[in-house]
Image 1: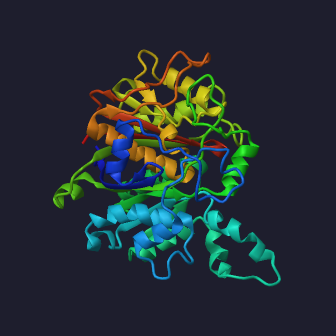
Image 2: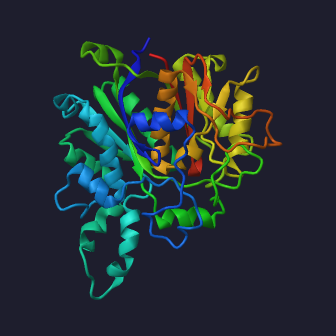
Image 3: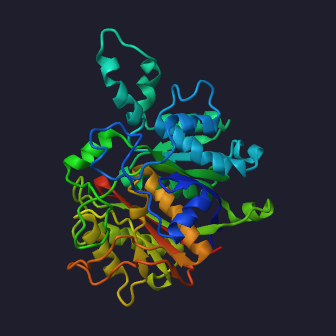
Length: 402
């Protein structure tokens, strides 16, 4: 039997706050982080509630002690560094700076959050300011490079961009690198910042709600965009025990597939989602009946929720375990979503609590199942966490009690 891959550290920043304690308090007390944005420069600021991190760029730069303030750093990178700071604070610096550590970071729109503010400078005959520093920040790997530089890491580095499943794929790749002996440990996760580019893009697709989203609700209209970052430290169980590390959870199974159905819509009956969940269970050596709680992708969009809901119904033929989407707490954080929700899944295992699906009131006609709407204290051994993205990129992760 293959040795177990475990999680020994996590770090997070989102609209709910910074750090595990603030997120735990928000989840338990049903305190959503959605609000009208104050940092995103958009004419739609008073129209759409978003999952915006409360720190300004200057505050993030000050928090990180960056020389020269935020100059040259995009908000995407600042969020990534602010999240990673928590993980690194409790880590053995020599251990994570070793050659046998991988950094697998995920991102979708790079530094668009900063570059879009400098468009007029880019096209001007007489540019002003230090916009030249930001020319190459559109690359999704820009935040990855800055993480390595800031924390003096010299790891195997790679960046993944598979839409909304990006950081879930990062976690899966990290586990595979460890399992195949490429590295000993892996820091995996993702980051994304709000931008006019993403807000206007999703709005043009008629996928954004102006009020708090309602996953799996008959009255759902669309998602609320969010921003943030989340990271997990993965290693083999024997290595974690040898150094006396606390084991937070076991990554017992994982899988990814592609719908190959439509660029922006899942297969209506949830065929791709179902296959992904089935393969993750097979990888974990578990059956559907072993899952106690499903942390659904649940975007509150017209197409996703019935497709994922049908897939869940098809997977759990006898009894469907409790399920919910946590996106009404944080908004949809795009590339960071898989990692942030993986951390929520681990918190569910640690606190033996399934998190509520906020704002749900009206069952969908297409489904016979409904999400939970209150914090549910229960015996949780295994959590299934779904992340499904545009382009049909599906990932399912299974976390188990240590």
